[in-house]
Length: 181
Image (tube, rainbow, N blue to C red; front, side):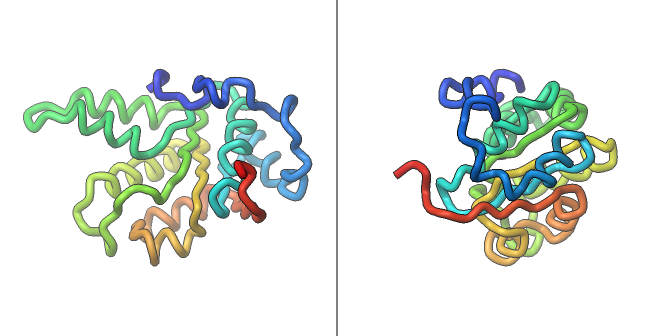
């Protein structure tokens, strides 16, 4: 999974609290501190372009052995290893995700989910990751363009998954206009 770690992407390789303007993140200092101390993850949400991923990258870079990945990248890798007769490779890949000390999932909610918990591969993978990491006491954080209620009501994320995210994360809503314009 390390080859898909967004921390190594050219766009983010120099992003850290020490070399970007962090004043916009000042109101979230206590939530960020909880995450940096390994007590809870963060669920960072807000409109497109407000700086969610940049904040996540700064937090992830401060923490030891962090993996920042998009859920669709993870599910694509699992689909590529899936074989009807053997799922050994799937288990190895998921085990890497379960055991990683710090997991950050970027842009949760852009995936296709089947509303009301239908049989959906992405839905099952998200639940497995969130549940297994929670049970193991591992910190998992997210960025998202949607609030938790929007994830459930509009995007079709199962309530049981959303409930576990809420229980394991501090929410940070970032407001403002796009920083890309």
